[in-house]
Amino acid sequence: MYQKFKNCILKPRNIADYIKEPKKQTVSYMIVLLVIYIIPFVLISLLSNSNVTTISSSVSEDFISADEINYVIEDGKLKSTTDNAVPQYIKTDLIVETYKFNALYVFDLTGDSFESVLDVENGLYILFLLTENEFKICSVEITKNNNQENNNGSGVVVSFMTSENNSNITKYISLSYEELEITNINFAGNKDTNTINFRNDIATVVSAIYNNIKIKLLPIIIIVIIILAVGSYFFSVLFITLLTKILYRYLQVDFGIVFKTVILSSTPYVICSLLGLLIGISLLEIVGQFIMIAYTTKALMTYKIKYDGGIPLPRYMQNMMNDKKDDEEKGSGDDEL
Image (cartoon, rainbow, N blue to C red):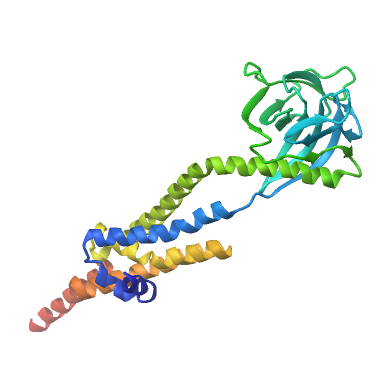
């Protein structure tokens, strides 16, 4: 297997010697290539860390302008730093990996139901609802068509209800602070002087949620990655097989022979894709495809010469040869007359 792998990378002519192998050996070799092709995608998915940042834009107490956040997480529970706990919200831009979202962080010990005015633009928001014991992730569609504008026009009236009957809120997941391994975070502080700390604290919470969900979804993520990688590989192999059949149809080679040749010739493509993924140069995958086409052509030509009676001339050259032969025969006939 090692010698075969080496020859398929360095000596395209030698690929012709493996075309006549039993199908089982070709399938086994293809499985090895697929494993090499897929493993980097899976490893990158497993080892990648979440990149979460938030940009704070407003802090409101009871949905009226305020300068402080009056909540902390202590011993795995959300607590108010004031005697009269009222809901507060923070509007931010949230960036997870390369995706940017509008986000609302609502601090409310009960988290049951409240209606208030939000000084926010219309649109879809990711709602992070921090209650006494758990963190709820929801989405809320804020539109003036579906929500009344308040009397002085300073914001949009939105009814936050966690009940399933309310169409305004779509609930996705609830996680306890214990599950997120969050025990102590002090959100309290002046929004101007404590912006960096707040941003870091919120990023800590969102990162914990992101990683928690990612771990739970990891088996599904891996399966999807494998399916996509296998699909990408077979698409390239089938495309080049069909392209070769069209361009070199004069070789009169069966589809199965061409398909096996392309699989064997895909070795440099797999290696280039692997290197491109590891060093972050996607162009290498395209280079690998061109090498695969060149190796397929070379291997088929060698196969025809060594095992299939030589390379037939293209039809247009055969026609030229026949025309020349006819002219010569006609000329010799005229000489005899």
